[in-house]
Length: 236
Image (cartoon, rainbow, N blue to C red; front, side, top):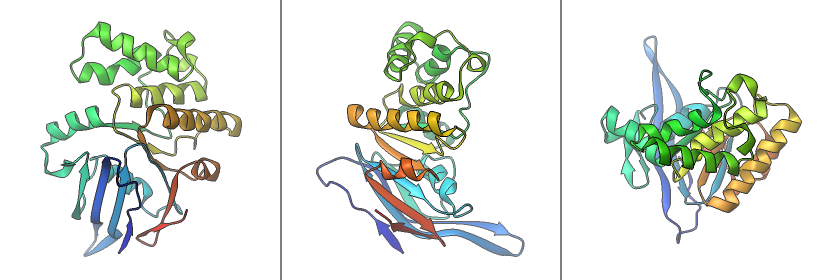
């Protein structure tokens, strides 16, 4: 068992992942991805998770986001055990308390940048006018005030990823989970996204948990963990 629990005790605990194991059935036996992993992340903290391909980094991120269920152990997000909720309750909770950014932006191509960023607000029941105002403000914050009406196909790769980050932040979640946010970008564009994440971390105080192969990105974060051979180790 490994416990990567260092945090500022004066800050609110956003993620409390305790002794989590994930196994999958594989023929007559079971495949263990990781076992007895514990992780605690406090408000405003930035944590990078690195490791070799196939180590289970994305699986761990999916568990933290309530997109997959642990085989044992429990995961509390903002004090709530998300895996005890109904599917509808978990979806509502994710929309309010968590943001997600992936290697591929997953923007809806038929909608503008503004409309894409408004969607989490609309799903949460916010009216169109306040949702538009909040989405506009967030797009301005990520440097895209001049691109509100552009559809994803009219944006560069870096701009699309900035829209995805704005969408993840628009509901002001306690934590944003990122899976290889610079993995599909060239070096210069990736540097811009790294700078943006650092700036948002310092300005907003949201916790960020990033799975990344980008060691420049990892080195800019407050804490770096390595997932290898089914265990989570403190690297820095």
